[in-house]
Image (cartoon, rainbow over the protein chains, first blue to last red):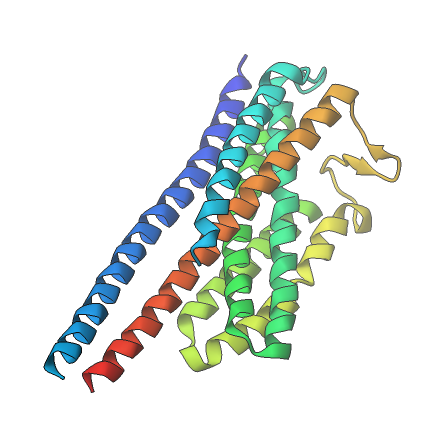
Length: 54
Length: 228
């Protein structure tokens, strides 16, 4: 029964590392996707402005 | 770029299901080992994590060679992302190993060949990541590729350390196959497959992230050109 605490610690730490890493990837990917959409929108607005000027 | 999310989501869902199944086999199906007791179940994450760390560094090795040969930055991206994923799994090995060792060997750490070479392997690839941050962009990919090729020499040294030197590290894989009972063997295989899916899921997500960063740089360049 004493060794169960070590088993629990090993699995907890392993899954914590994996989940923290995956969560960080997900958060960064979401931020990058937002940035891409913003830049694409700005580019599109620029193009529309150029077209309306000409 | 649009196709990847469509395939990635079912792949990640399958990974999640396999991991749940692996946990079932570890805690319910696999028997408790007679000598070590429940602590032996750490083995079911320790061994797959070790093999996947080796696989990650092998991917880095191959991608680095391809980068130096083709000078295509996509290979550099694969190498970098594989190292990061490999370091995660190597960290898991270095944490679960001592947690197992404490109740069995009565020490957290010993300078056993397998443990020492694994630690050196971890330091090597952490150094790779630090190198990438430290050097200028125009030198980064070349230096990292050379480092990724040379650093891979540690992997066979680590793997064969239990055969090259005297060690107290358990030998599970012998010339006669896996040294364990049938249900344990099956649990290990299922857990290994689940971890493989997890590994590739993490690697693909990491590569996508790098490609998104590169895409942003390209879009910024277009914007700058338009503004001029």
